[in-house]
Length: 566
Image (cartoon, rainbow, N blue to C red):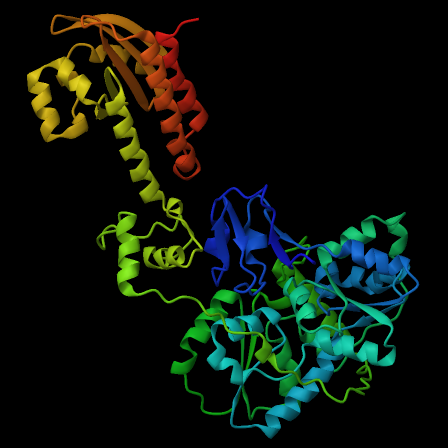
């Protein structure tokens, strides 16, 4: 079974949730410590691929399959998107097609031809349906977005193939045994080719094309100018630019129609959300593309240059071909109409308000103050995060504030298990946490304070005894470990101080030597248990909280070393 166009390399995923933050439709599910893509929800815009910091989100490579085509006896034609000019620059684009011929393709055609055919058909359609709203259907990510998440707007989608599919149909009409490989900047085209089988056999991004050419011998010899000249294709070369479709339509229809171009998934989503509240004075054509900067900035681009530079290269090329005659377009296709209704709307469980409230309460989000969203989970509100949990797409541990509370509560319980006094202090010598054994060691007055303020949080160590100087000494000397025998209330106490977080947190162990000796083996056993249980929690939140679990483990192990010397 073929891998989906976009997938997760599980071994690389670091559980950072950046893909969730960037995904416009939240088509990500956290499972088995990995952020996997839910195909039914995905619109293949490629945002997750571009933003994943560890390249765990991958685009399926079809290079090997194309190489297999080229090595076979089949006729293979490359259908090149007009954005190749922006991708390689005007000078390099002049010889790009010949490079593909030398790579083994039998022919190279420009998809701008299919775009020109589409422009003619759209112009006729709008003239025949003047009192309507028309949404472009060239961008497969936008088509999937509308069909899956705004199905009520599907009636406004233009019922035509994209230029890629039209060009593939045109090529195969001439020779049905031809393999057609589309080359362009778009990841979603891989999915579109599979949604409409028969027109396009495989899709390569520009990144993949470079990979294909680099494995061939003597790649420098591939770039030989064949002097085929420039082509216009009746405005089809404008398509990769923002508003590029509109250029050709204005020439054909004129000013009787309103034109709007919207590029970038955020802006497209904002437009679709507010669509029903809009009113239009006359027929309108709306060009929608998922990539900011339109197709010259697709996720499959190499992007050696900025989007501004690529746009300038494209416009320079378009200016140069104004001096040439229109390339003749022979449209022998009987029908380029299509119906997108087979792309089914997304149906997700709509939880009851009571269920959402219960979910929020379970992670400590009991009031509006608790629900001030930090965004660490990837969702734009605690409310949406709760819904994702109910739908099985998220887990409680994704919430940093919840895990912080879990870690704190568990640490508190573990401290209480210690058979001796334990205290943690910050760099200002204020208590972060302590257990009841520590309070008992200091006497009734401190025990009473402990009952009112469990853990003695915030109390200055200086007020509890002269032993605070040993903690101060550790901070000043940057010592990792200090051990002293001291007296507290006429009790001989073994004090062990060690670093939990350098120059930030110290932990002190107070072992009362005047009481019957606790068995050394029992101390070691209990301490090891505490280490294991504590680290189980720390490791879950280490990444999110920026803690260093390995340092914590080393620090806690010093407790064992004190009571179990080799």
